Length: 423
Image (tube, rainbow, N blue to C red; front, side, top):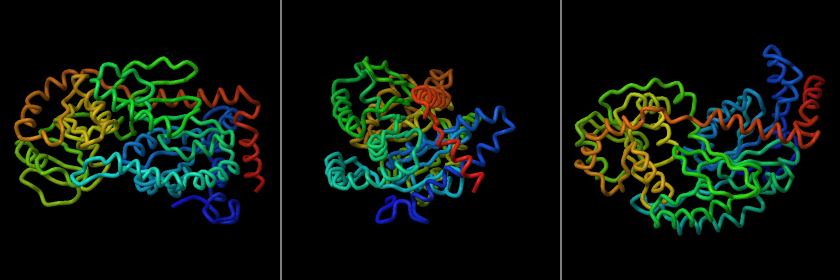
């Protein structure tokens, strides 16, 4: 789905009209904040923020939601989400003070057996590039009419281009920019070469952002890149993870992609512990192995009480586990170079192991189980979340924009109050 395609960009009932309605939604939010302090400061301090994200996997959407739940208390936020991100966030935000709209996005291609198909992904991306100018123009019309104060993107290329064409500043908050901004010299040569190749694609997504925020469960030193404002923060965690009270049962938790390899299921069945598997799709139990549908609440509850986590090596799920003090047996998706790098850092930090999917068997899982206590001892401190750091960074950017120009949070903010009250 796209925004504004084939419509009068400002006509009644159009997507743009609904987006502009966000300006007036914010009136009640602003007026409702009177009892929390200086009303004038609150009215002038509220910005309109457009926020886009990648639609591949659940990590981007989870990260965005963690930030949005904080931003919405002070600002008017509209999300632009493709693919799985829209599927996850649409039911949460439709009909609320946070606007959400579907857009087109890129997605990975996989070969038989679940291996990431880089050539296939690249070819599909090149085909999509032909449609980019039209998609950017659609978003540009929306940006021009709604006049957001700031655009934030989590590895999504369309909205930053539309923002740049309209002179709207934007910042990047994602994990992928570690490929460009971090010194990865500790890694093996082959991994560094792969990181350099992926970095070329990362840099092509967008550039010229005012600030780049790299969110990760590991923290290699930053490269020195003169003239660039780059910040490092921890994993961005939802309220459910932050509020969870860790304990330890005998449970082993697994988070897998759909259609996991047979050897993985055989190993889990033989481990001797009760096992709960999320993400692999519905199927009959295998001994003590139980398969559950995707359920965020249930997953977090089980993560907080499990003995350890067996999972793909995504930055978000690994970061959540480490925050709760859970050792991780990371299995990068076959061919997924970014996850291979994440797995390297799991081992480097001494908080778990990284194994290829094909190498997991009963012996390997039993060996990890025997070492779980040692891995847990390496996590005597909780991995700090990056939420508060990101909040300070965003507010700092907005404050800087206000200082650079008298338009700052612009009279547009106060005008919308006047118009909303008058209407």
